[in-house]
Length: 213
Ligand SMILES: Nc1ncnc2c1ncn2[C@@H]1O[C@H](COP(=O)(O)OP(=O)(O)O)[C@@H](O)[C@H]1O
Ligand SMILES: [Mg+2]
Image (cartoon, rainbow, N blue to C red):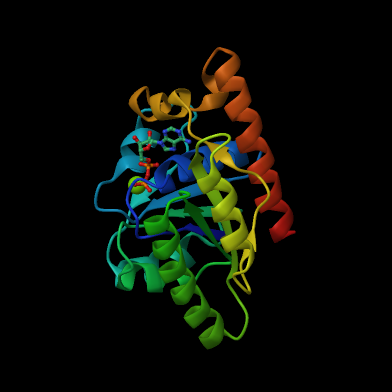
């Protein structure tokens, strides 16, 4: 089982949106996928609970429960997505001890870049203890097209060692915001804007997938 942890202590950067969309994308590809919702807000479990695709999930919020739950799922699923909490807590550390890839969504603002570097710090600690894993990838989330901030963020994030900046950027789009309210995904939303966002997610997740194979 490949474990992908979506982490960043900054609330609102897109962890739950990414987790649900990635889980959906993997199951569309025919991969058996499970989602662990490790966030107190439980956004992804509420979302998945209402989706027709019936992706299995469980809310697991203590580090001990997480460390015990993950090996239990190992035989039954090809992919496990952990939707991380809005803090760099013991839960995040526990997740990083079991992950193959830490995926960090980052909004292109100064504060968010700082919180991403805190996440990278935890990832590096885990890599050092585990002598290698998890792999780490950052991507720009909720970026506004054509802004200077976006370009500045790209040049800063490219410089972080041992962490790959993915080339796909997920742009800020109302249609993505609407998916959580409507408990669906961009692939199941009609219209050109949804198609554009679906293409971005397809490209992002293909990059993620390629990192793991
Ligand atoms: N690319 C995007 N464009 C517009 N809104 C987004 C985008 N990504 C996430 N959102 C919205 O931003 C809010 C926070 O996203 P969420 O995935 O819940 O973040 P987190 O889990 O990191 O707190 C939600 O209302 C979500 O619908
Ligand atoms: Mg969330």
